[in-house]
Length: 443
Image (cartoon, rainbow, N blue to C red; front, side, top):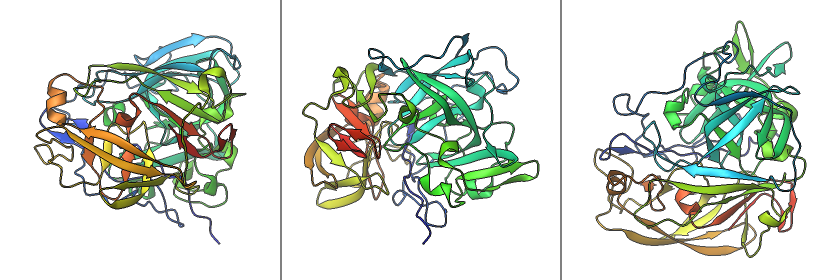
């Protein structure tokens, strides 16, 4: 029997064109048994890419990674020696700040990548931290060092990743990755919009409503996927879904990709703190605030600063990495926790939406709502949240918001607003932790 392609990616991002015109990104990642894309839930939200007239232009010089020698504005190129994980260096800062592309509520961090086994390194800033996907994906213009390509036979390996906000297309490269004091050697990453193979196959572009080809589309220099999986597409090791492609001078065609060649969650390649992550953000007022700073801690129960404590564990479906949520009498089996989604995305057409055909919610007064989430292990808990007027908050200068929400049918996406005031644990599938073997979320 053909193995079902597993582990769809989330990442729903809504962008504010102006304070009065908002849009939410719908659709979702995933594939059927034959590799065709499926929606993470019925998509009825209006979709659009950032408006060129209202979003500031990129401040990144569009240089080829193979040709550029000077660092771009995304980071710096340095010469240093790779280091291994040490006990006191398993955490680093994550921030929510004003975004040059007009996006709000994006959780960013920095990533250092090196040519494998060398001292040629570059730190890339403003990388979106995403607990709903797996692996590091950087835009080619943001990278000024030349990472070696991963081969597929005698040709190059490329990949198409379907997200809620569109698809990313680019080659697979190998890098040594550093996060805080952690070190992930020889890890496969995606170089998005690699000029070596710029043409997006139709079988890839058909999986999403837009091609995520530049930082302006998602408001970040890349995506750091630290979700519930280690490998990006286990089923692709034996079946040629429309996820991995073999590329030559004559074009690109779907192919299989062994696990060790696939884009990989770098946390799973750490020496010790390799079973998951903890994301902690401060509490913020309901009116929002201009910025917020928190922490990502690598590992769960591996050091004193990442113990589970009293956190409740919610195991997830091993084929979808989801649990269930009950909201206003309806059960949504496609529910998940995702720092890469900049809002709460859920199905409630009774809430007033913002002007201009936006899917974002703009109720006349703040709403106090609740849902009940339940893991496959039967663990359940109520989740209280608020929904406020997105236009009003953005007009006040808020960028960090715990009540920023939009309509998305057929699912319940606990995006970044859920993380404020919490420690949220994401345990990698198959990795042991003091709370059991992943995959699970805990908070």
